[in-house]
Amino acid sequence: MSRILIPQELNGKVDAPSSKSMSQRVLLLSAFLPGHKRIGPISGCDDEIIALGICSSNGMKIIKDGKYYNIYGSFNNPELINVGESGTALRMVLGLLASRRCSCAIETEGKLLERPLKPLIISLESIGCRFSMNGKTLIFDGTNARYVSEISINGELSSQFTSSILLYMALNPLDEKIIHIEGEINSEGYLNMTVDVLRKLGLPIKRTGSDIIISGTLNEMNTSFDIEGDYSSASFLIAAGLLLSGKGIEINNLKKESMQPDANILNLLNGLLQHGENSIIAMKKDITSMLEVDVNINPDLAPVIALLGMFSQKGASIKNSDRLSGKESDRKKAIIQIAEAFGSVVTEEDDTLYIGPYRDDISPALPISLDHRIVMETILAQSMVSEKFIVHNPESLNKSYPSFIDDLISLGFKEELE
Image: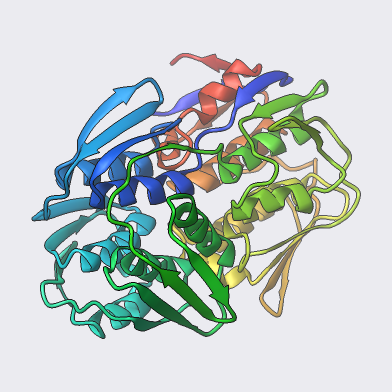
């Protein structure tokens, strides 16, 4: 079902949605460890709902208390779990299943099994796990998985592979364990987030060069865990403020000293934002210098930087842009299509994409996307040039930021009911 929005000047306060990168890690650990956990606030995006479903599949009981969830019980080997289209859930779950020596069918949706997985499979097969496919179902057999003190993983394609092995080692009952990371680590900040979550749960972890040293084992999880606001999603609110708010938008629940990789948006937009206590204030600013982002560090910020670059004086550069083609959709192609629809000159050199300022004499015909981040980029781009427009596939926003449109309405946008 589509929605019709009428852009208006934005103003006010809004809470950033919960960091799904953090909540997924905490919830998935909750699914495999006995004890009583209170976790929140959780906004309820699709990936978080998937993680809560895995908790239920593993025998945990769940009681919702506002935006918090009480999760308790003992782990039971699941015969079947569903990870939907969540690459994070699929990859993390494999390491956790190996730690519990489970045999389990893993249902997926969409094109999830077409996304990279081989380096993780190779590492888990080296300790005795076995894999097979049945359509969109991945059959995992970890009944013969060994507990090893050392294991290697190639970290070049995705930091989630290393995070998965780290979760296996965290629940592995041996006292001293080492992970050897081969190659350069992509999106290392997300690995650091996994390390930070485990340290907060009491597990000693050291980084020495390309090695991770783990001492001890997580045997239970009795804790209250606060989830930060999500910088990946909040970056679109920041863009909305810079483009559409004369008086400013205050975005709350954003920890300034955050482990989230996409907190780097504060550095990428240095000098354009104001800081409150656990909040960011964004208002209309002339962006006079070229904006730059490295996809190997902040892949999810590429659509926002491309958007802001289009409406700046000197445009934007997106380094290592080819990596965007392997996300939920071909984001590189989508970003180029949006920019060219606005008359921006798009060039590429040595895998760096350059996007020039838009032309205000063009009425753009924008592509329709099912990718949540591209939909958010499209909404804000259309808001800059249209008096009224249709949002196609608004349900796709459930992937990461279900209330994005409603939050824009609370800040000043109007909606025309069909």
